[in-house]
Amino acid sequence: MSAPTTEQRLARLEAVEAIRALKARYASLADAKYRPDYTRLADDAMREVAWEQALCFTEDAIWEGGRGFGDSLVGRSQLHDWFQRSPWCFAVHYYGSPQLNIDGDRAQGVWRLWQLALREDNHDAVLLAATTHEDYCRDADDDWRCCRMRFAGIHMTSLGQGPMPLVATLAGLDSRMADRARHV
Image 1 (cartoon, rainbow, N blue to C red):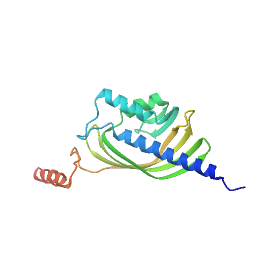
Image 2 (tube, rainbow, N blue to C red; image 1 turned 30 degrees about the horizontal axis):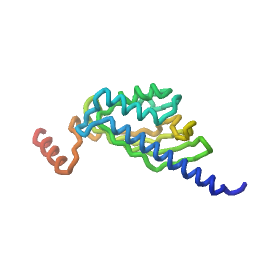
Image 3 (spheres, rainbow, N blue to C red; image 1 turned 30 degrees about the vertical axis):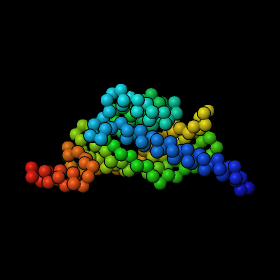
Image 4 (cartoon, rainbow, N blue to C red; image 1 turned 45 degrees about the horizontal axis):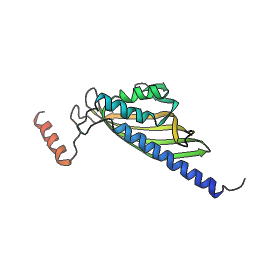
């Protein structure tokens, strides 16, 4: 077996970077559905951002989120619907530690997810960790898209703050905690 050529090595690196950029776009769009005041975007804006998020996937993509986390979905249209009705009113997704294997116009990846979110139903802060196992393919336009995403090892916990919203500064956090202590 001969060593890969410079062209093959370059093509692999370009594919890895394109998939990393795709994942960054997906996470950014997942978070863009929420306003700084911890509310969802208006319906029209939500539909638009959710559609852009769904475009990170192939037309026939498979989503395996598990019970209560999108369940099993097939196709961009079902993903678009799920992205509009996710259980959050705020979220910040951090994907890291990618393990990417490229095989021509197909690839597999494993990512570690760290997510902070506020539940839509009670505004409780949730910390979520998971691993995603993903398959990708390069489309006719030479763009990479996710064709399968499976969540594994989902762990979540309430941060125990009840309906107390997140704040942007330590001073704001101190103030909220002091208010909470006064009312206990």
